[in-house]
Image (cartoon, rainbow, N blue to C red; front, side, top):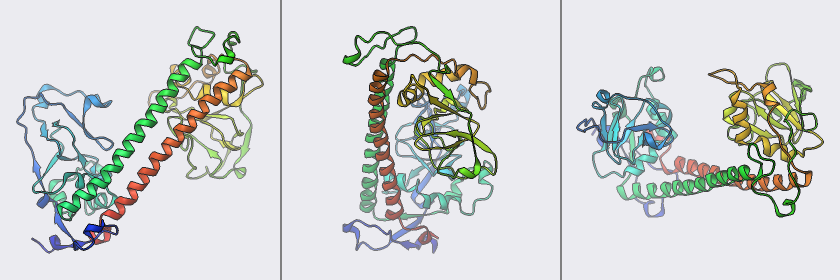
Length: 409
């Protein structure tokens, strides 16, 4: 064992039963994991996609459609459950873990444990900032397409406590992952429930009443028909506001509008000059670049928006929140995309957007629908916040359950 192999360290946070267990031993990567290149298969195993989000996963379980030839598949390597894979993007997101048996491209490096280390301990460690930093150290040209080699991985020192302590850490972090998964499933269920409600609370194409109506409006008659751009429905705002009236807190562009109707984040910076579309509280802001990203938000303050953002304001026959519900809707996004121009970065056609069919009931019924959907939005936002809090908690634990980077130098 080299002098480097004898490096030791301790994490900031340690479980009580291991407080007196002594320092952790650091071991070179090739002492813990061996490189595997088994191509002995009949091409009957699922082809695995190697992703930063899902790890190694069968392609048919995600939206991944890259065609391969029968001849090329014969050269693919077998991946067993519990193997790790070094990918072309490992320098960004660490090393991926496989929960599946399958085959993967021969371009990838497959790692398999050599001794009684705990796979799930390294599953978490290989995704830490500490490890990714080590992976990038002293590697030249990697961002130009050069993949991390097994030799380079072998030179990295891996913090290796006793197997029982590895298991304890793995169990702790895996339990948080399970919570994140459970809350994410609830979040997706809430979104699916809202999507179903939207389809029932608004009339289907060619219909003048919705499938689902609140009891007090059952006999209220048909909804009125109009177009989004009609003057009694909405105004497409053109008023301008100068740069000196804005700050990063009330400047909105396509960059800080979030996808999937998720709201906004604070702008990183202001443009150097110019004037901007002046929006008010309750206006609806729509990113007109790549509309399929669903960047639609109802303003919570007054401010200014870049020229690639459409600002729509409800007029006398429409209440603000009802307009928001109609436009934070996949049906509206799909309508925009039908006439969007450009392939790489499509933009909505403003004249077409104004023709979006806009049926509406009485103001009282509008309010009832908007209140129902807004309350569901509130539940969904709260669920999203729980997920982010759990992720932040896990990130904090990852920084404390493993020795700090300076101990690994």
